[in-house]
Amino acid sequence: MSECYIKLRSNYLDGIIDLAVILPNPFVGHNPKNFYSSGEKYPVLWLLHGGSETSADWITYSSAPRLAVWRNTIIVAPSMPNGDFINQPRMGEGYRFFDFFYGELMPFIYNWLPASDDPAKNFLAGNSMGCEAVWRHGLQNPDAFGCIAPLGDKPCDYSCLEGFRSMTGEEFRDLTSDGSVTIGGGSEKISLRRREINNISKYPTVGAFLDSIENTMARFNEAVLTGKLPNVFFPYGATERESENAAFAKQLTEIGISIIKTEYFDEPVGCMSFWEKALEKFVDYVGHEPIEKNDGSLPIMTGANDVPDDSCGITIH
Image (cartoon, rainbow, N blue to C red; front, side, top):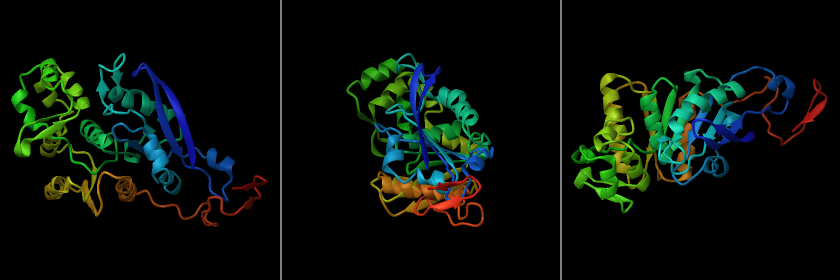
């Protein structure tokens, strides 16, 4: 695989953002010149990381990059530690990640790299914090991706905040000023992280937040009713949240819509082994066939042997 680490100067973010990009590369027996000048546009897997992590957690600590090689797919993994991959007007000069993603990052990838801009060949996946972002992006832009994969968690449900609807964002921040808090009781109980509190308080009222795309379970339920759901691959597994996620997976199945696929894994959701397996199943589901031949005559090799390529007069590794 070919790894590119890009520091992209962004107008939307008013600064630099780190991108990890994994590109397909020629296998043994390929003529590199022909490979790189083919003009082929590859599918794109947009990969979002968890909170307090960076793209390095996917690229360095998982097997995800191998998918770029074995599935001829470009992987794009931006870094936004603890930023929820949304617009954060109170960060720096105004960190508008949502706007950046569609108005700057996608045009950069599509026009400066051999990446397909066909929505049917673009796929969005993420874990933990990135999982919630996948729901948000998919529900707001259901036509932007061929399929989305929120890896292991259902959309966040903020319905227990309805009692605070008339409260201003600043009043809500004052109420929850001690950081991570639990609101509500019973099945309506929810624990809020500080970054969630900050996000809610950026709205003029709690009600404005509840009516926004960032209240994802409410928007999901609306999308079901209006038929505006994106294609969804929802993997879930054995975790302390298993009952909730299993119930949600059952709900998805009962909806009976062909664009929804659920898959159970017998291991905890919050670990890299689950996310790796779920991601591989995801690319299987969307039809990225494993490469079995290069030019039709030689089996794929990634450097275990040297094969002379008479067309370019070199030995390819």
